[in-house]
Amino acid sequence: MITHSSTRRSFVRNGLASVLATGSAPLFIPASVLGQASPSRTFTLGCIGMGKHGVGVNMRSFLHEEGCRIVAVCDVFRDRREKAAAEVNRHYKNSDCAAVADFRALLSRPDIDAVVISTPDHWHVTMALLALQAGKHVFCEKPTLTIDEGRRLVQSVAKSGKVFCTGLEDRSLIHYHRLVEIVRNGDIGTLKHIKVGLPTKPIFPKQDPAPVPGSLNFPMWLGPAPERDFFPTLTDDQVWRQIRDFSGGSLTDWGAHLMDTAQVGNFSENSGPVTVSGKGTIPPDSINTVPRDYTLDYTFANGVTMEVKSAEPYIRFEGDKGWVGCTKWVGKMEASDMQVYQKKYDPSSSKIWPLPPREHRNFIDCLQGKAAPTYSAESLHRLSTAMHTGLIAMELGQKVHWDPEKETFQEPDANALRTRIMREDWKKLG
Image 1 (cartoon, rainbow, N blue to C red):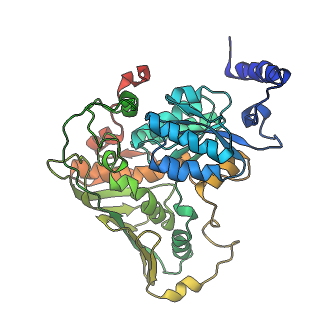
Image 2: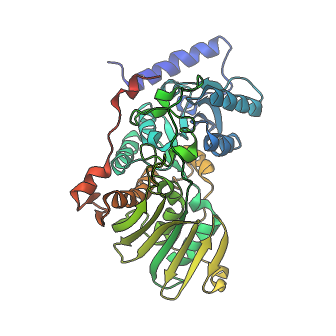
Image 3: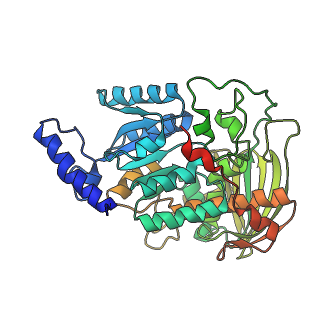
């Protein structure tokens, strides 16, 4: 019987030996071949999803981090992957970055140590699970699409022994770190209430079906999502985020930022709310199938309440001795007493971790054994669950009761929405 370990040993023994024997050794040998203790400590990356964020934030950030090298990029759009590969080659001043059409081909490459997943939300967990099964470390964008898939991801990461980090920056931003530092250390007294504002997104008019561009593998773009017709703006990130088959709208997009800060400030980042209620409005006669305008009321086990509403980005923590907040994204810092921002905290006794590096540096540090993930799979799951409970409460139009330990609702209808039906035939595509 051929096992993964025996296949790996054979590759190391035969493949590497033959390359060295011919005098054509690659510039970078993957760390998975040389072992974690290799002197170079350079990890090879494959980037999947070369849209705005995939290129503009993730790919370009990793290009400028020491300890890693991008060797392949992948996208269902031919022009996107080719353009991304060309940029990688310009950066490294060579021509060996592969432009891969099917992510499964990228996962099968033994010269790739880790993957960077920057796809639409409905692909995040499915792709991460397949990457883990292929023996890759994973850096994955937020959020999950459902509650149940998040727990499966946590279990798979633990079983694999691989590094998993989430592409989320808020715990590394001084504005939000400073807020939770003040709140967790008791300088507004006992926390009572949190207010969170999330951006209101556009209403997109319905469009007629249109031919699929020749440069796009549309069945692979859909992946596990339900079958649907293509229309011209569907793959725009502002559009698909407003369609429930692919995302949860502003609540799961921007909510992943500010609701994480809210839960960290409340010491509930590893648990979650116990009740959620609220109302949301889905624009009629539009592409949008998630609530655009909404107000949600959360209650946590410690009695702290939280209001989340569609507005502009903001967060405010209210205690029995004062309040602190930030208006707009990394915007104006405010407080009932601005002197609170002048206070210094002893790192040895502070109730919050030191400000960590950004998510891309953190991932490489984790691969090199120097750090733990700032946002682990468990962090991603707990944060996403808080957002999904809000979506479920709005979909049912009723208050729901959530048990963060058992990860179940009291309401049977709510439990049925912890997962979604996935299309089975996507594996045959592409």
